[in-house]
Amino acid sequence: MEDSARPTPADSGELPNGAGMAEDAVVAPDAGEAPEEGEESGIANDSETNAALGAEGEPSRALTMRELLGELKDSGEPSSGRSTLSEGNGIGSAGAERASQDSLQFSSHHDVAMDLINSVTGVDEEGRSRQRILSFAAKRYVSAIERNPEDPDAYYNWALVLQESADNVDPDSSSSKDSLLEEACKKYAEATRLCPTLYDAYYNWAIAIADRAKMRGRTKEAEELWKQAIMNYDKAVQLNWNSPQALNNWGLGLQELSAIVPARDKQTIIKTAISKFRSAIQLQFDFHRAIYNLGTVLYGLAEDTMRSAGPDVSPNDLYSQSAIYVAAAHALKPNYSVYRSALRLVRSMLPLPYLKAGYLTAPPADNTIAPHKHWERSEFVLNHEGLQQVDASESPSSKPLGHMGRSKKYIKVAVEDIVSVSACSDLTLPPGAGLCIETIHGPLFLVADTWESLDGWLDAIRLVYTIFARGKSDVLAGLVLNNGS
Image 1 (cartoon, helix red, strand yellow):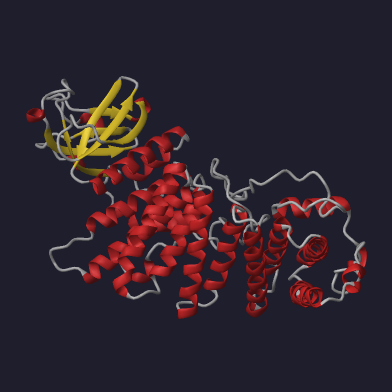
Image 2 (spheres, helix red, strand yellow; image 1 turned 45 degrees about the horizontal axis):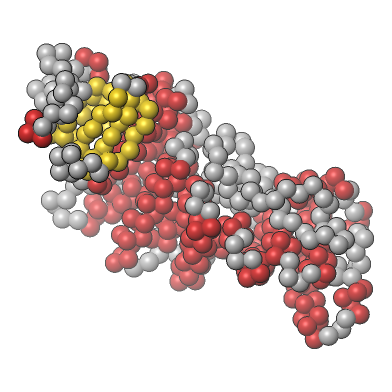
């Protein structure tokens, strides 16, 4: 397939998973169920915010942009840009009276950020109204920092305002957007200096850096920015390992970086990206963005393999793996046009009428605890109905799942009978990578040829079960049995 037709990652520009969302442009991810189409992708998990922002005598609190804008709207937007703070830079007379060198530097530094915020006008009336609220919020956070320069939440919330303002900039004004994001990064840096465990700050800081990197194409400067974003995603995951969204964005950052670095470094980075997407899926089986992104990175790896490998190395397995993830993402979200378009490119790479086909070592169907000498390596197929062993004398591509192997008893696991699927290192199993499928009838043990092959089987079986549990098996059935979407 041509490079121009390759599936593109589901980044924040196509599917909302970070800055650029319809409502909460910069929020911390939620490890819960993936949002339905049209919803925001996450809600910050910091403390509740029932008090007014920056109330006198109280520390400010870390907010999501939805909470921030809601609080300010409830408290009343100041007319003509006026607030209880003084006009001008919003710092207030108390700061002006303390005219020490430190306070002057403080004022000068924050004047730059305020000037940038005040220069944003918005592209329409809604944007202008939103920006007036953000400008008011920025003044309150400047005041909060003046009262308590050691308040990390004030810096964090101010960074959110700057980052949200950057999304409100006219699309033709890239320099202004970059400057706002740069200032937001400075505020996140200060927030994390004051509170090194502020997970939300590292996560949103990484998004801001990534947005700056995207403006610079495939340049050395972009490479350095992607590396910084990746470091912050790493830190965010260290602070909150149960964050599929952070892992997904980390994988996207690595995928972008792999397109810039020298060829000798690319393979290592791509393999790391695959592990991040896979980890995100393992935390949230129906996280369709990570599922789709794993498909795109495998597709890119297949393309690279086809161009650079010798004639004895085939990229077909990688193409087939890529198609499995794209198909699963489409089955979970059939209305997403990005997934639908990608599926048209990769559907023919599936072992139709199945989602996956490959080899596993299995015991006799009527004696699952048989001695090793009775275990055999045989072909298995997986589709919307479940997993089944194939009679070597029959062609799996010509027979439905339920009509194979009538003359001999073969292993068959219906998707509705599956309880869990996991890797297994039981020493009583034959050599290889152990796979345990817990069913309502008891456990079934199989052995994959390699641990890498096992990862593919684990993901595929889990995805088929997740699609079944979400009531989307009919979509998957139509995809593999008919002409897809």
